[in-house]
Image 1 (cartoon, rainbow, N blue to C red):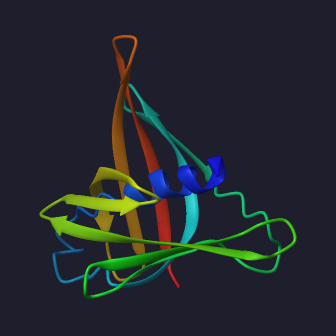
Image 2: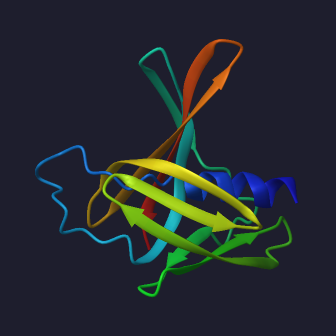
Length: 138
């Protein structure tokens, strides 16, 4: 269940905002996105690593549908698939995802035809940091 919540928060981190004029607003979040990278930004220093897929033959991914529904698929070490359904909405550079009974809003850092990069800012003990996730279009 913790992995499901982590993946959900990761999906929420999809704050779908384009930072580059080249990316424009023409790219759509609708479609399938594989988990690719994740990490943190502390004090302006971003550190990303590859997403750890438990199954070696299948990759965890999200599907955003045009009607505002979504499904997250993840595979365990035995390559059994688990799916969770939810909803999503995009308002400018904000992506709001409700999945597993939790709602999170992420900032879209980049949205192109092939990459979706999102971040969620957290504050702990007077310090703030961003959790970042990068997805590749499937």
